[in-house]
Amino acid sequence: MIDMYGTADSRHILQVDDTPLLDETVEFPDARETDSLTVTTTGRADDALDILDTNAVDGIVVADHLPDMAGLAFVDAVRERYSAVPILLLTESESVASDAVSRGVTDIFSKGAHAGDSDLLANRIRLLVERHKSAETAARARQRLTELTEQSDELLWVFSGDWTEIQFVNSRYESLYGRSVESLQANPAEFMTAIHPDDQDRVIQAMQRVSAGESVELEFRITRPDDEERWVRAEAQPVVEDGTVARIVGASRDITERKRRESPLDSEPVPLQTVVEQCWQTVASGDATLELQTSAVVRADPRRLRQLFETLIWNTVEHRSTSSRTGADDSVDRGSTSHTERQNDAGEQRSTTSLSQSQGAAAGLTITVGELDDGFYVADDGVGVPAEERDSVFEGSHSLASEPEPGLRIVDEIADTHGWSITGTKSDDGGARFEITGVEFETA
Image (cartoon, rainbow, N blue to C red; front, side):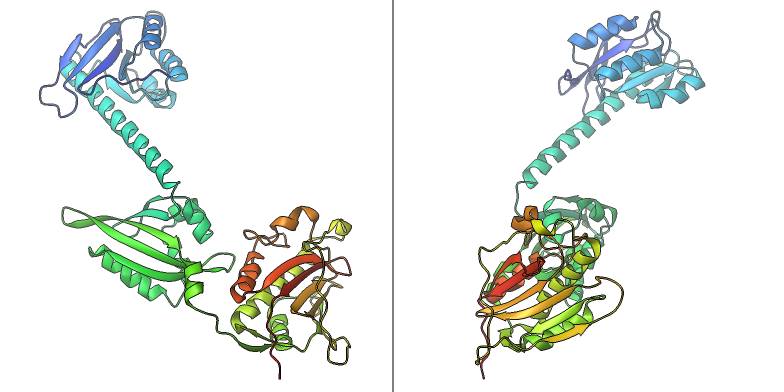
């Protein structure tokens, strides 16, 4: 496409009219941006198209009737080549005017009502060109800003001064908050729903301080749609115009790993049997059966350990409910070998406790929780982990079920926080088996 812009203080206008109103040069001594218009005039559409192919123009004035073509037909021909250049149509026909905008005309000028008023016409096309140039300049600036901000590891954003409108946000919002940019733009208050209930009052107070003209920095927790909890550090600064906070600019970043290093787990002795039975009552396990082959007590954060088991049980039940046994033989081990199952002092396997719930889903599924020499495992006799998902099973918000939440990444992060390792393999019955190792057992 040919560049349609002239110099900074003069605009080149193409006038297509066999009875033209504009002179070759039009001066605007009092104008702030455009000092003059340089006008090229032709009475024929075909000549005008040739001019457009070889000359840059900033705007077009065209009559609705030309000797060789209708005015709107000429507009169609221009729009096939140049989608953005402003076009002012001169017409006296209401029917032509009603169809003009949908055909690509920028504005209408009534030639009959303003016959001989070339100054009015000149000012109209000047204003059209200036507005178009301002819009194009702003669009290019926004594009450059977007390209720069997309290279940042931080979430960058701009809100209106009262926080009711999101004026800019980069895509880092999606990876940090787990929600789409489009959803935030549609509902600027969405980010507040992610803030941990215990932190919301503190965040609201900080927002009010920024709206009053104060810069703030604060740290708070958010909960993503996959139930993963993250820590965020946000910095916000007011932009004041004419004594009023016009907008608020800020940056947010993920500080979860730093917080985990600074705040050790609330580790205490936790009986595996107790926490698993509690989870079994909480998760809708359907017609599945739980076999507990453990009486071990481990050192762990009780809340996080419960979240680990709830997530694994939920994924297993949902996977069985939404899948068939077809392809179970394609399951492959994530780990090369299974860890040895832990035995009691007499060398016998731990006793088994069975629990079941009959709700019609996950019929016939058995989930087993047992001990290893250095940890524990959760296994099932379901469909297993397909080979193509082996490398990604703990990434993102991957789930064994058809729905993506809560993701198995939560399990991996909980294990990592405790200093444990987790691997996925195939159970003896062909289902999935997750082995958590590096666990500290509590001994009497």
